Image 1 (cartoon, rainbow, N blue to C red):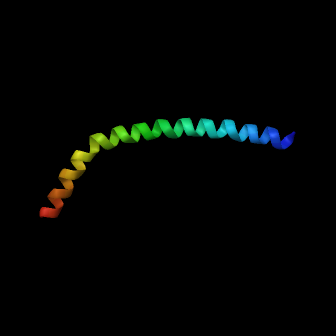
Image 2: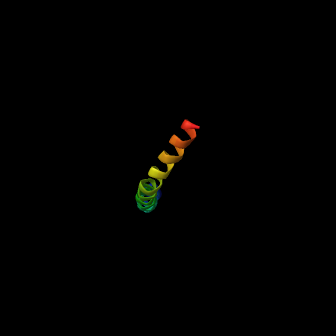
Length: 49
């Protein structure tokens, strides 16, 4: 019984952390879309000089 309860608890914990992870991942993708062009510009600027 104790192992079953602990596995259930771990499952719910994993689900909650996965939800937070997917949320932060989507935010990271959005930030990446906004920052990528600027990073590319800075990168080429540094490479040329």
